[in-house]
Length: 125
Image (cartoon, rainbow, N blue to C red; front, side):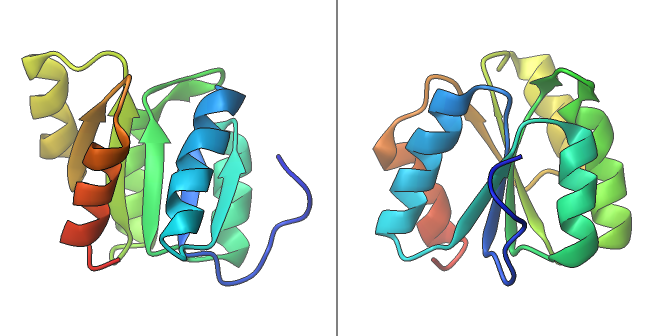
């Protein structure tokens, strides 16, 4: 987990690829969205205990589990938080499962700046 857990983050990035965290964080920061990133589901749960981000960018394949299995936890305890699944595994069945679990948006990797910006505009950011 990077630095200390900051207060009032607007977006939490959960991805084990540091490059993705930096790229996505940079794109969001340009939109004046305060971000925090973590690399595991355990660290994400710890951040969520202190913060309630508006948006979570969630990778599916993480070192300590599948992001898709974390969606139910987020929806149960943080029902207003929007979830954007970001994954290299973006088959039709993966997308259907993600939406069934409750994700709000699904972005395949590699993603473009335009795709991230479109999602953020749809979310009102």
